[in-house]
Picture 1 (spheres, rainbow, N blue to C red):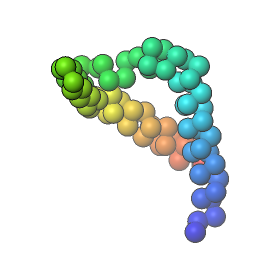
Picture 2 (cartoon, rainbow, N blue to C red):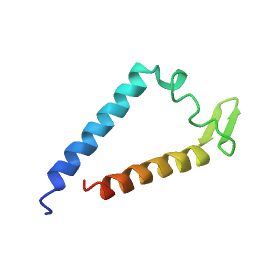
Picture 3 (cartoon, rainbow, N blue to C red):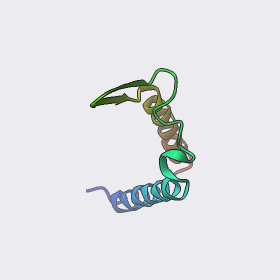
Picture 4 (tube, one colour):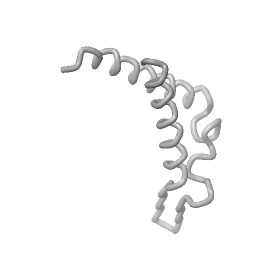
Amino acid sequence: MPPHLGKTLFLLGLGLMLLGGLLWLGGGAAGWFSWFGRLPGDVRVERPGFRLYVPWVSMLVISAVVSLLLALWRRLGG
């Protein structure tokens, strides 16, 4: 087991707590992240008794942001 695994898991958990706090304090879907699932390219089908959400573009945006953050963390010696 790598010696820095505990630190990494702690920081990941702290980051998830901060994200959850932002969502909670920001009003959830009606707040700061209301764009999620509504970008051009996201699939949204709503019919009586059926809903389908496939946030393709939103997931690509989140993936790019997380990749940039991880690259910065690695460069800064995290």
